[in-house]
Image 1 (cartoon, one colour):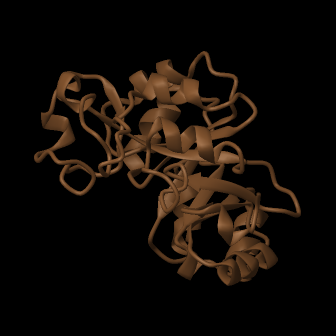
Image 2 (cartoon, rainbow, N blue to C red):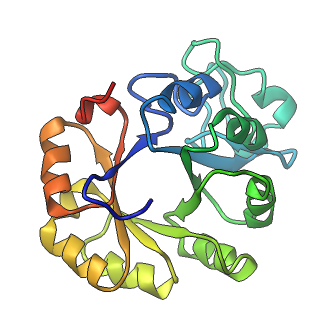
Length: 226
């Protein structure tokens, strides 16, 4: 996400308010309006990387249990939100996103950084890796010095220092802790600011005026695009 006068529009889980989240249909549809597609990665019981937000299966599918306890052979057959859309593997999801659209890969847990890095190795998209977990970001930096990293945080302004300590290129604060002072502080130390999760046009306008670099949203309607 490059800094400009207009924030990048990031499709959170492929615009989760518009489409069945983290599915191929969502990514293909969101790519028509978004600058960047955000997706979540977990590892299945059998070792494959799957695109799914929750640790538990029950909110989004008819199944129960943990993603990490379920083999890919079962996960791939589950429909998301009764849509008929299946849980995708990371490789398939990346293939569905046009080269000119950026990708924000959020790692939900540790221990899979080598697999994730291998999965994105051949893509033409601009890729940003993000996580709430500092150890995940450290693993990424140790294994790929050129990786672009984003530190996601629910905390206040101290997350800027955390992002710097983790050698990140961006900080991803929650919308209610982000204002013009926060953005100025982050920019002064070389960090981009990508804010989540934007719910209204008024909030988007406030944050755009504050100078944020990216708006992470569940719908493109916050910017009235398309």
